[in-house]
Image 1 (cartoon, helix red, strand yellow):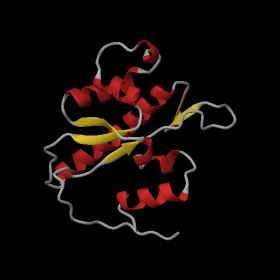
Image 2 (cartoon, one colour; image 1 turned 120 degrees about the horizontal axis):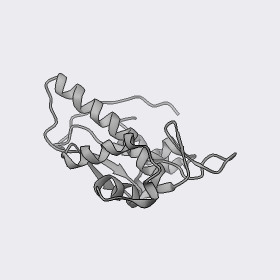
Image 3 (cartoon, one colour; image 1 turned 135 degrees about the vertical axis):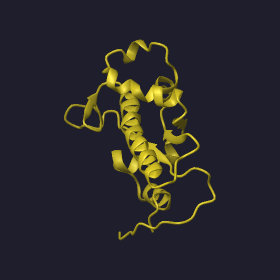
Length: 151
C-alpha cells in the first residue's frame, strides 16, 4: 500500500476533526488495556485517557491555528467510541470507578465545560482511530484512508 497525504478544501465550519481510541485487553502478555503511555485496567478509563491524549492534540492544533490567524470559533469535535468515556469527560460529578485516575487527566472536563472540545459518540464501525490501536481488516483501512486525508 502506498498512500500520500492530500489537503482539500472543505465546506465544514469545523477546522479539523479528531478521533481517539483505546484497546482494552490489547496487550497479549498482560491482557491489560493500553492508551498512550498509560496502562489501565478499565476499558472506560482507557478510553477516557485516550480522549485526554487526543484532547492535548486538539488544544495544540487550536493554538497553532490561532497563531496562524485562523482561530477556531466552534468547539472541536472529538469522536470517541465509548459512551462511558464520554460521560466521564462531560459529567463533572464523581465517578467512583475512575477515582484512581490521576487528577492531571481531568483537565479534559474543563475543556468540555469551556466549550473548547465536544466529545461525541461514533460507532465502532466508523472509528477511524481503530487502525492505530488494533489489527483491523482491509475494509476498515479502506474506510479510514480518505477520512485521514490519504489517497
